[in-house]
Length: 504
Image (cartoon, rainbow, N blue to C red; front, top):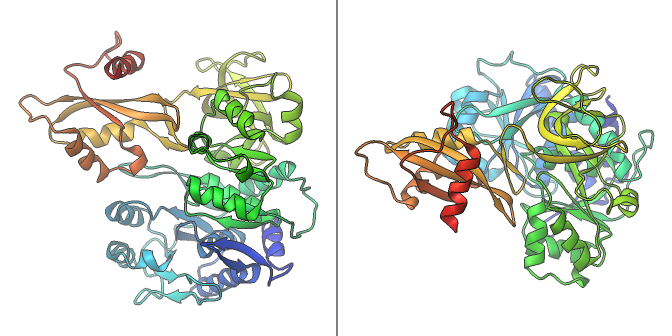
C-alpha cells in the first residue's frame, strides 16, 4: 500500500463515527466515506476492474464524489476526470473520446439522457453513488459490465488523467502519476505542521473546500485535507454568501479561494467580525495583485498566503508559510512564496536554455524526484524570477494562456470556436486586465465578404454551445483588419491596445 493510501485510509478509520464532511448542512462521517470507497472497490473488483484500470468520474463537489476520488486513487486505479458542468453534447463527446471502461457519477448525471447514451455507446459499466450518507452504490440499469473495445487501454502508475483546460475539440489531459500526487501531498505537510512519518490521526477544526474536484486545485485540496485528518465543509463552488456563512459557523483558522474571491469579499463589505477566526487566507490558481493582498490584510488583518502549482506537478510547487509572511511579506512582496522542500528551481533563457542569475527573468524550470524521471529539468511555460532565498515571482505566461479567476483559457480554443461561425473569416484573442478576475478574454474578428454581421448576443449564443461559460469572451469586436507584425502574425500588444482604446 502506498504512503498516500496509508494516510487516507488510515484517517478514515481512526474514528469512523466522527463527522468528516459537511455538505448543505448535513454531515457525512468518516465511516460513510469509507463505505462508499469499499462499495465501489467491490463493484469494480467483481468485474475485473483492478489496478491500473481507468475509471471515468463525473466530478461534482459532493461527499460521495469526494469518496470516489479518494478511493479510485488509493486502490491504484486511475481517475479519468469528467466535468459535469459541460453542456450535454460536450460531456457526451468527452465520454466517447476517452472511452473509460467504467463511468461513475451521481443521480443527477445519470438522469441526463446524453450521458446514458454515450455510456451505452462505448460499452461502459456504470455506477450511481448514494446521495445520502449510508446509501448503497448501485449499478445503472443495463450497464452492469464493461463491454467496450478499450478494456486494454490501461494507465498503470497514473493516479489522475487530469483535464488542464476546457477545449472545443479533443480535451487536453495530463497523466498525473500517483507517486507525484503522493509526494505533493506529503510535501504540503510543511504548511500544516504535518511530518512525513506522522501516523494518521484526526485534527481539530473544519477546512472549507470550494475548489472544483474536476481541476487540480480541488483534487490536491481534498487529498491534503484528508491526509491531514481534518474535517471539511464542502461547497459546490465559491460564493461570498456561502463561504462567509461557512467561516462564521465553523470558525476555521485558515481558509482560501482564488484571488478573484478576495476582490469579491472586499466588494461585498464583509465585516471584520465575520472573518475573525482566520489567521491566514490561502490563495492560488491565478496571479495575485499585491495591492489586492495588501488591501485585504489592511481591512481584515489576515495575511494572504499565495501558493503556486500546476497540474503537471500534482499541485503545489511554492508557497508562503505564516513564518515567512511575518519575516518577509514586505521585502518579498509579490512573490508566490518559497520553493517547497524537495523541489529545485532555476530560471533559463527561453531561446537558448542558458541558466540565468538570481533576480533575472526567464522561463521557470523545475526538478524533483516525483517529476518526470526525477533527474531532468522540467520546463514550464511561466515567466519567473527566483532569488537567492528560494522565493519565486511569476510574471506571466510564455504561452499567452489567459487565467480568468483561476481557470485557464487557451486563446486557440476560442479562435477555433469563433472561426466555426459561418460569418467569421478570422479571429484573434487577447487577455484584458480585470480587477476581480485578474484577466478576461476579448476577441476580435473579421467578417467574410458579404456576410451579415451577427449581433454580439447571436455570437455569444453560438459560442456558449461550443465553450465553457468562463471561456466566452467578455468583449467582441468586429474589425476590418488585424494589427500585424512584419511576419504578418497578429500583434498581441497592438490588438490589446485596440481593445483598450475602444473601451476608452
